[in-house]
Length: 106
Image (cartoon, rainbow, N blue to C red; front, side, top):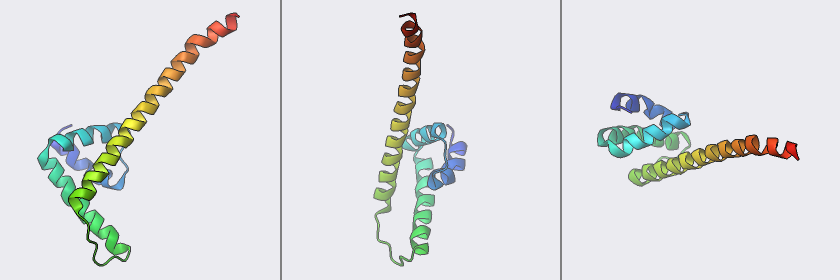
């Protein structure tokens, strides 16, 4: 993924509307590109502050670096879980395709 594409996906990341493939590529990119990580961090802080102001918190005191870092970790685990689920589904389908004809023979 290039920087322009990553920058275009920042709002999708923040709003949690990114598909799994784009999320996987986006996470890998922002981990390796400090410029895009800084861009994400800036927008994430603004979004987070706006969310808390809208919810009535007038003085949220959070370490935004930690909040973003934790969010990135959670999303990485999400991607890994979803990829594992898809792999297991494919393996399960292959096993059914291979073993159903064998069961029909007996």
